[in-house]
Length: 163
Image (tube, rainbow, N blue to C red; front, top):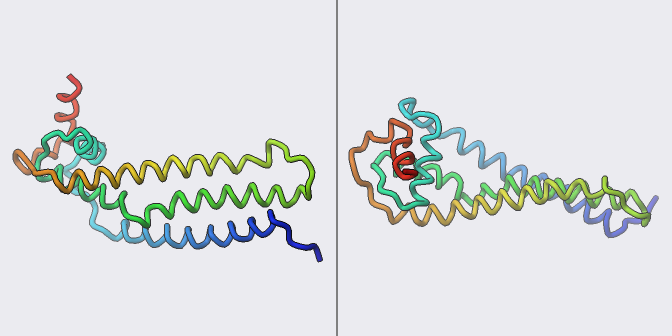
């Protein structure tokens, strides 16, 4: 029987946290999937355009604001952080497991391949936190214009803002 080392213990802890975060991610995605879909009248990119308009503080219709709030509520949910957490702990498990297998020898580049999912998960977490900031901004916005102007996918507002 081999004694546990620091890297072995960290690998076991990371493996356990993978399952905890994955359970949270499963609960979050199940809740989002159970919700009613966005109406078929909206075109591709309508949600992205609505969120961008919140970021620019552009005037929005009632439908656009409702869509933006719904998207930002989904993205700003604390359980949404379970998805990047799963990826982060997966990278930690790979790095710590590789270091444990080396038994003190010099690590190679392969050992640190787990850093890539860790960096990716940090980027995902920052994007989720950015959505939380936009969620607060969307709460204070008031709708303007007719309620059915979102049917064009928000492209009219985005193209006019670019000109």
